[in-house]
Length: 348
Image (tube, rainbow, N blue to C red; front, side, top):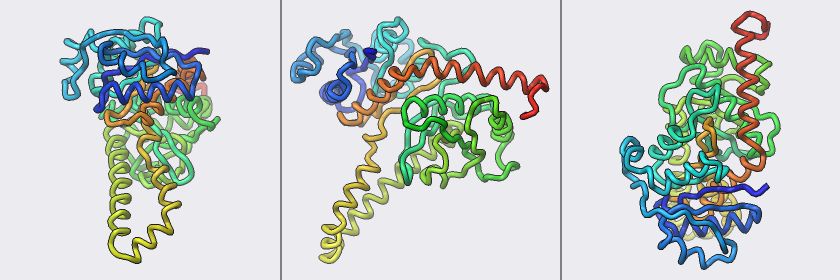
């Protein structure tokens, strides 16, 4: 298989130079990757010539790009010829298998939703990404695409998280937890409790572990954390802020005196491992799940390594036939829910 990925070369804080360097790194790691660069050819072509890996790469020209601060509604109306929109259109038209963009998040979600539409059985797409844990990583969704969610939305997020985790990691039967204010059955609002009741149905084919709390996320208690977008976004931003806080405080501490500096020299190998574990570039690439196409959102501030990681996530999803896997999981769950609602399933 030759995965075709349309890349918004104009998306991101650092311009085409960083994006294209990341694309070249991704091609070097994945020789079968077929990248399609979308953006201003006058800016893209001179950079492409620097990389042997990108010789003969296809460039879809447009001088238009979505500004970082543009409102999604404005981007929908005025950005039909933007690099972001054309990259999504390539997926819609079957010319690409996935798209990657580091541009305006709201605009990307709005455009992708309008162009690609949700798959049957999914009401709303959700943003999913990996977070570091004590012994590895966990997938979390939703990270901000849906502020308010019904029980059905949360169940659908669980199905999507399960499929995403299986095809992008070595975990064959991911454990799934619902983020809540406690582990007891009576805790949480009605939507969370109702979603839990549905997820307990064994015919869903999910490895449901029940409710988890915020401190369980980085402890790695489950492989997939399901939440509404409001709580999920706060959780991930808090985690990112805490990681930055710890690293900055450690830097200050090691500069506080001679003994501290000597201690730093002794601890440097361990600190290098810690920095690698917490490096945001290693986890760059949030996926908008639930659409008729693969859309990966790269962080706007990502460097070339982060862009490589976002593209690699897209390639993994393509190679493992994520779309077919997800659609099968959704169909199976809908049948299980239908049986339960009709009283034919004693597991309800």
